[in-house]
Image (cartoon, rainbow, N blue to C red; front, top):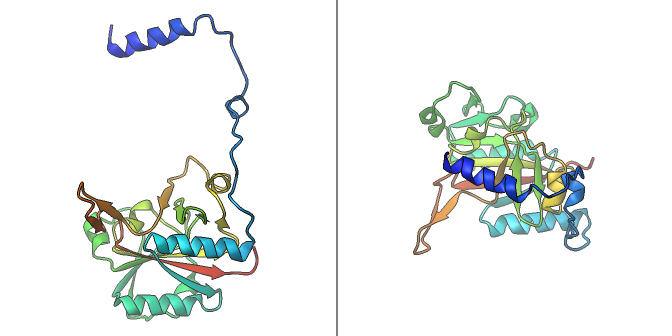
Length: 219
């Protein structure tokens, strides 16, 4: 008998006299915690998101929909990017003002890590943004592409539509997400610390995360 079989056997014996309970898990386990902390309006929620993103050392920009193409073009030029990775479902208007000399790189399944590492920047949308934690969540939708395209290039520009994609709390975010999708939770640029607390950025993802909060006015 293997260790696994012995352990499972002990569990079965311990539960032998427990009456069956078909109560759904969601009802059986009470969750009386607060769904959010504080009562903020749309502007206050967006401001909290911006503050927490900045606290994680992300670079935050504010724009409206009309100014978004110009801002993205400016950020790529300021970075000196010669190439930008573009997910298949990214709104073409977002790159309308970007210099045509900047090479657009498609999100391809056959791209190697080395090829992606040579790309200067990536521009994506997001699934949802959480104000209380300063977190951006990607779910692999067409405007975000495969998970690896936001982990290998060193510069990530992520557009968050305000107020439509901004929620206050993690519980509110979970209601919008599908667990079976490839979820990537991002709180600032990639960073890690050794035992002496020396911070190193860019180990597990881009060293520079720029988040654009784009006011779309349509909720």
